Each structure stands twice: as C-alpha cells, then as structure tokens.
Image 1 (cartoon, protein in one colour):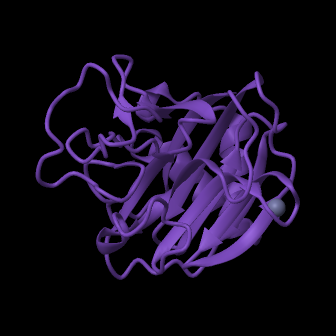
Image 2: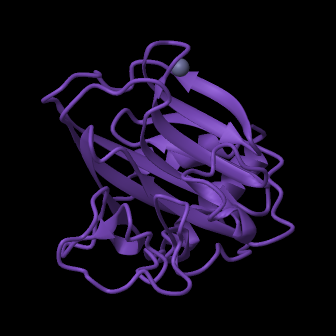
Length: 240
Ligand SMILES: [Zn+2]
C-alpha cells in the first residue's frame, strides 16, 4: 500500500477510536425466537428461550437463525469495526453443510430470506461451517452469493469439544471494503472489495444447529474492544 494511504488510515483509526468501534447492538425485537434467544448476559444463543415466552410477534425474523443490529451501518467517512467472541461446545460432530455461526452484512431485504445470508445477493459474510468439500469445519467467506474462500480445520469436529473464536469485522465505506480478522490468530482472514453500499447494509448474527452444539456469541463494541497497536496495524493492512 502506498505510504500516504497507510498514514491516512492510521490517522483515521487514531482520531476516530470511538466511531471506529461502532456501537452496534443486537436487535432484541428482531430475534428469531423459534431458534435463538438473547440470554441474561446479552449473548446470542442457539436455543429457544425457556424464559422469554413473548409471542413471536410482528417484525421478528422468521427465516434467519439469529438477529440483525438495531440499525444499518452508517455511511461514515472512517472505517467501522466490531468484534464477536463465540463459544461453542459440541454434542455431536457436524455433517453436510452444518453451520456453527455466521457474521456479516446484507441489505435490508436479504435479512430474512433464508436461515443464513451467505447464499444471498447483496450480502457479505463469514461462516464457520462443516464443509462437504474438505470434510472438516471450515471458515468460509461469501460475497454476493458466491463462495470466495475456504480455510479448512478452523475447529476440530468432535463431540464433547469446546472452543472459543474471536473475530473482527471492519467496514470501510470510502474504500468499499469489508474485512474479516481473526483476533485470536492476529491475522486477516479475507478482505472483500467492491462492496455495493448503494443501499444501507445491516450487520447480521447467526447461530445454528442446537441439536448438535451449543453456541453463544458476544458482540464486542466501542470501548470494550481492546484496540491494540497490533490490531490497528492489522486493520490498516486489511483495508490496504
Ligand atoms: Zn472447506
């Protein structure tokens, strides 16, 4: 990346610490209560709630196994960054196209077409999923319905195994890029470019397969993000 751009992004990250860590929230009114709920700690869990007996109600997602954020991403001049920490523990190994989790963004009308957004137009996502091609759990990135990348062996596919994953997403409206960062491994997983942001993009959060595993997903935003120099450098690299 040319030096000027590097300095530009670094300055943006420095000056906009607060807006960089955008204050996303799970939309509790959109949660698909048939499959998931938000627990007392505020995490998204792949279980029907046994305490939340509110009726499904108007306006809830009915197809998507999760929820969206309360608002779409603002068309800000500086990059927007948020993180997810997920904990999963397996009861049985996954097979087929069995999903563990999904994070990404999509247009409003794509939010509730299917159980996930990865196959949909105008959507950009990272999925942790059992991959029939590799026969293991892969980290997949998807852009506008097309499979972009497959990283095999993200997690062992065993019963009675528990794992933690920690991801960062950065969206840069100026450069039309979305990048996925593996915070635990300190590396950029994938950068998707030419993102179509002609209409607002909504952050999405999905957790799956309650009969095979338990997944909970914590959204980490704003000052709760541990924004180290190393992480800043990685974000700069991802957007270069
Ligand atoms: Zn794969």
